[in-house]
Image 1: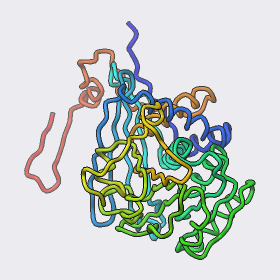
Image 2: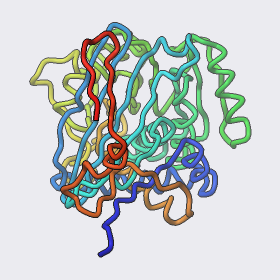
Image 3: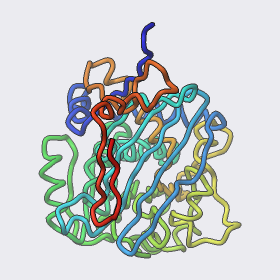
Length: 362
């Protein structure tokens, strides 16, 4: 009788970087955006819940689960803005994709790099539905770890030609300019957020400080702008003045989560918003006029991680990348878990507890 086996594919950071390198950043973002759009249009197929968060004075650690009738995924992710002072990323993540019928984990993968890619792809999907189609200029406020991904997604997928950059850390802006020097983007370094926003079609904010900051105020906003608010993504962490939201048509991923975590936490419970899936399915209207201000309150939702994990699984199979790890026991008798350690019992067992008055001998 053949022993059934559970094989878990493992993708390291290097594996994911290789996938993106082989496919190309532009094509990877396009494929991921297409998958996100398609999955959002299957909204009712998913068992959804707001992410489970453990907050501390310095940051947050979260679990983000979701499932349809065949596939379950979750992401473990943190957010600790002070980490960069210690040489650590602000965001670190990994994820699992499992088979709903058996519960067997099929994929274990890094999601730190992938989170930046899927967040950028989500931004592009939302802007395609909400921004003016002829948009060519974007302001990018916050030039840290996720900024290049946002810039490239809007360039490759939405036709943005000029990025106006601002960060309180000038070195972060110079890092971005250096990383994107090979592209056709026009990169304009600005001395303030107000200067960067002036004349922009789209404004993306992606700052990291865990504070109720005001990156954008109402007097900075021009008719017809689309605002992509990415940095306000946990309780007590916002970027946008409430008057900006009052002046905007506001769209969200999953309203119960955004009410707690997004810039929407400024607003009363009856403040009207539209979940983006309804716009993508054409059940609700997005932008209603050239002069309307649209605001996407992007906090990150587990459905995007589901899409990303499915993409990684499929691409790894196509490209033959990754390795198999022994994450789950393979047993001749699934009721005999003890068989895994039984050989160690054959010669007898002696256990002495440090500082304890007990001993066991064969």
